Length: 126
Image (cartoon, rainbow, N blue to C red):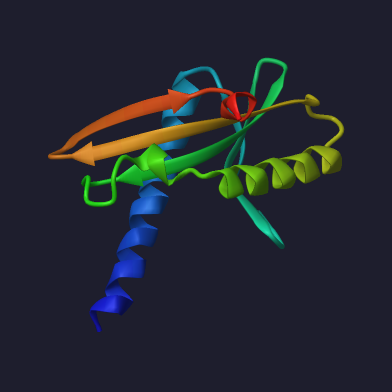
């Protein structure tokens, strides 16, 4: 029965993290266009525009360190999936900027304190 609770808790943490992320990004000057964009074979947590760049943001939120730092959950396969999904999204929206970027936003929420770490343009480092 505990197994049924954990995914729901994880989903709630993820939803809360994405709401925190959207608010944080807006304060940083991003214009949030879409959340939870899904197609067969991929998902993007947040699609935003920053100046003349279309930004795909992967959000990772944690409430404790038992699974490591949030950004440690990003691997090359996940990045490739986001890039492929983002390119598809951009092709469906030619009115949006065609300069693309992948950012990761790590959120730690512990003891009522929330911290954000924004990693910009992570795809270029691969």
